[in-house]
Length: 298
Image 1: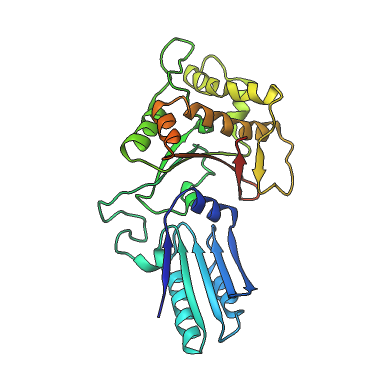
Image 2 (image 1 turned 180 degrees about the vertical axis):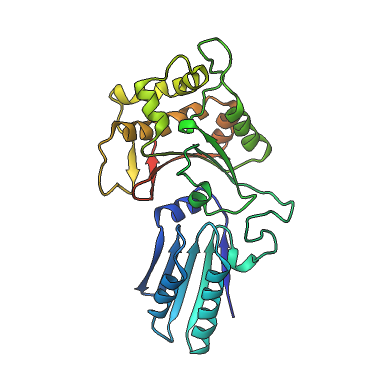
């Protein structure tokens, strides 16, 4: 009998998936554990790992990926059926979107919504950089996470104005208010990344002839001040194996913390956080290693 366990999507699941990517198998006191997290394995790789598990043992399979192709679903199901026929026992724990158990009932394999249900619990604010793939971060399907993308994952402080005196674009502000007040999300996550072009622009400045870009990047100026003012460097968890030493990358980390402070200029955010209904979190994505890190805001 196939057993499926699905967990609600939130910051914990996002971190669980992002910090542990790939596929591995290990033996523990309660049996064998196969972990498929983050990036999808190839079918041959998955089949090879499944074949390495000894027969007639208890196996826990943790699946936490953005989506599963039909071939990978078939590979897991076929292995589980044959494994249990041979006297073993396997239970599949699906974290985030339960692709194996819901099949095509609500979301098809192309990610097209086939029902009107919507219950996002997380608002993700991340950079517009094409190398950032939000569903890889959240292991979510349609309707499960709100995503706002802006250059430098910038959140203008409430009422921020351009040098012309006009209000800065309020698109991000509108999304934050809607997510908190109308949808009642549990978490807002600000995610920065390495080699960020917006942070590079914030350091060197943007030409005055590009007024819109200049005004937007100016909203990261407090992050530059934060970094140059001797404030403690944000702590990453887990600690990167190697520090790039890049000033741009350091600024990206400071910027995440600064944008979270900007979020706290929004009355709806302040009220929900004080009431214990909302959590704010920061994350940093290393593009070169495809590793995600939690940022300590202290």
